[in-house]
Image (cartoon, rainbow, N blue to C red):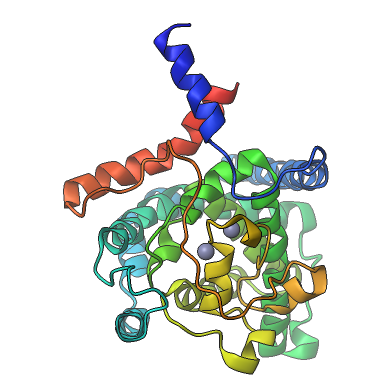
Length: 337
Ligand SMILES: [Zn+2]
Ligand SMILES: [Zn+2]
């Protein structure tokens, strides 16, 4: 057995997902994922053909990268919100051993600053093609509830439906081995903090953008309104990843709390496959995936010992580690084939 074979074999034995896998555990999510990916791929293909024929979108896709990045990272209200949450996690930490200014926070800051580069290029191009495809396939045939219900009621409805679809997507990321590899990047954080939601692989962001965008679009919101709705969850996501000791009291029966989401990120096996919600906790009660303990604050992370976890807060190392973490799922999947 040569060195390469040993390395690959070792990686296979150490790359273990943070969920329990039965013999048929991936059958349903695989079917769901294949149907969803096929449908979206067809719509994007139609969008691409329409785009090439019309030739009208090149400036929207290729220009404005700097402005898009600036808009993504510089939102004053979000900045104030983040600083406020950081002060809370410093004052009332769920786990004191997770430092408020540790290398985990610095690496997530790296994700916060570097991921928009991919978001404003790959994802915005993808969303343009997706929305062009939806328009080409459906024309104006959406439910168009806005005239009857008004923008706000439709926005609330779209928000709830998007949250349900996010639950389904999240559940699938934990039950499909290939999707898990991309989602594991998000779960790799061992020092949960206010910026941890930004540690999200571009492949997962594409899936999340799709499930957030489509329901709003089908209900009759325009592209800008649908996009605004998708972005609004970043406040909730920042809150539930913060290292704060709170389970929200009675509100936990409606909303996901930092305590509940920490349990979702737990490395302890008894917490696997629980608390998939992003905004509303009622989906987990409904689908039987709610973890019953509301006062546990476990350590977080993944069991993959080959994952390139951050070792330093040096800015250059942060950038190279971000690259290594982004490439890691592709390396694992390549090793398996
Ligand atoms: Zn997860
Ligand atoms: Zn999370």
